[in-house]
Amino acid sequence: MTRVWTDRKIEDIVGNLLISGVLLSAFVVAVGGAIYLIRHGLAPAGYHVFRGEPSDLRSLPGIFHSALGLSGRGIIQLGLVLLIATPVARVAFAIWGFAEEHDRLYLTFTGIVLIILLYSLLGSGSAF
Picture 1 (cartoon, rainbow, N blue to C red):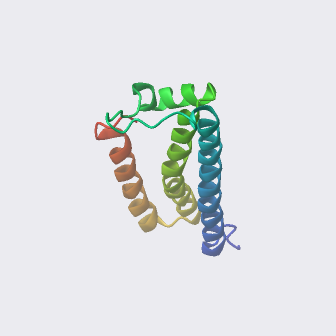
Picture 2 (tube, rainbow, N blue to C red):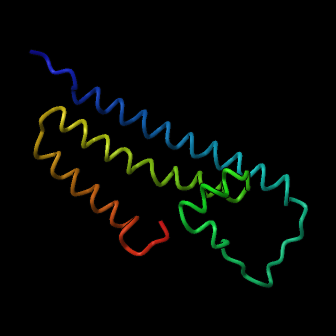
């Protein structure tokens, strides 16, 4: 019986996943940047007072709501979230690939890496 999922096939899919994630993220950030510049590009810069990100752009629901409202800053933030999600999706896919190959050792190590990634993003008190 031949294995349907080979290491080479998984590597190709992972490579395409990473390329697609980065390109999609760059496109979304570029669209958000263009929208932001169209709306605010001629506004004078006020560097004497630091203004951080608005509170609605510090959580995933706020980012999605802002992006759906076609806010340039919200769309840029969404692109950055997609960029952060790309390696997480890569690790999640690797878990599935190793499970299909019945490779328990790499499945275990990759599962540990995914847990660490998710904890660092979600469980460490961050806004996500």
